[in-house]
Image (cartoon, rainbow, N blue to C red; front, side, top):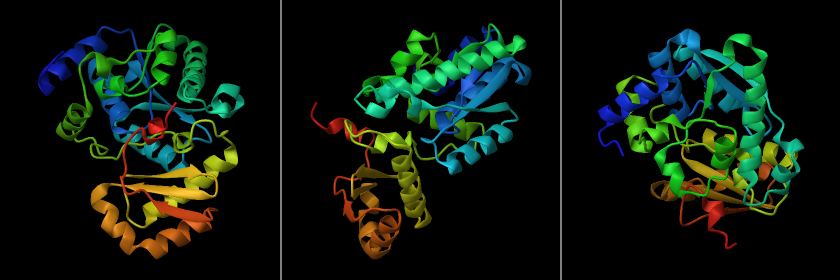
Length: 272
């Protein structure tokens, strides 16, 4: 695997430069922003397009931010509608839920690519990184089945390298906290509904308004389980009254604070 960040960057640019064109599944997070930036460097603006999915699982604020970042990078940007809730496997919310989500995304992007003559023959890629390979990521299987590339992972980029690249090139989301689909807040086996996703969007917007950045509101029926970074636990206790009030306003009856703190893939800890 490529070692230094500079060597990884060179490997990434070589890989992207060999493509006829690039369609980036663009969330607006640091991973996809780095991929988009590198694609434009390697191929030029006219041979790259960023595509962002608009759906119930993406908060409106994230969609707005994705548009802002795409404009910052002077990228051609398209917003398409996806409907993962129409897929029974997604609504059922088993451990392969992300497979059905990414399958919907990549199938819609494929239709976009085929609908525009100049995009035909262009490669579709998403911002998977090396760190993702060690986690439960069924979405990667959907990508592999559809021939979607993972150039960052192929070039050896982990999260530290991605953030280093973003800082070096002045990308504004270099330190943006990680974000995942709102459905990732719902325990496996609990059916996903649009109303639940909307409730989670309201709940997390309220917590963010109190100044928290890296956190999750996990949905357990009438209970909201709040995960904040361990160093933010004392502040969460200080703001206990405000947190309880805003999460009740979002529709939860009970509010709990997870003493372990925020961690990615928390729902994967549940025994199979």
